[in-house]
Length: 149
Image 1 (cartoon, rainbow, N blue to C red):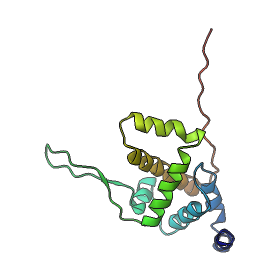
Image 2 (spheres, rainbow, N blue to C red; image 1 turned 30 degrees about the vertical axis):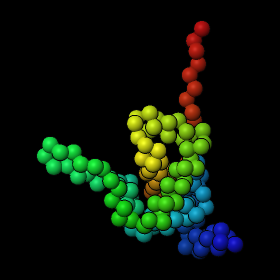
Image 3 (cartoon, one colour; image 1 turned 180 degrees about the vertical axis):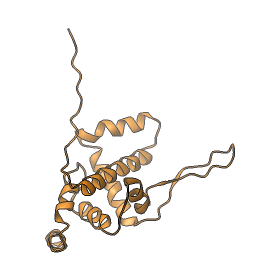
């Protein structure tokens, strides 16, 4: 019922192609794709950095002189969309396309939550690029190495 109403509303305003572009990304579902398309059409974003900052997923640096402070998310954007992107990252980490990237983040010393937030930011950047360029999503092909005899 709700999914049908969302699709009708997106078709009515002409944003359905953008929502479908976002939904093609592994881990992103109906609700998250609609929320991303809605947020994208709220303003003119010059870059993916501006889009990430609008979502509140940019990192605040608190350094002073020689002291290196903690890095934290600014959380200035919509908390519901951040939650949806985090959940999308949790789903994406289980797919073949993103499992390697997630493991790379963990091997870099990031904690689980930090790795998921980083993956969520990556998903948001990809969604932004797809909507900005009006292009279709091409899934990553896992690189497999062959042993040379």
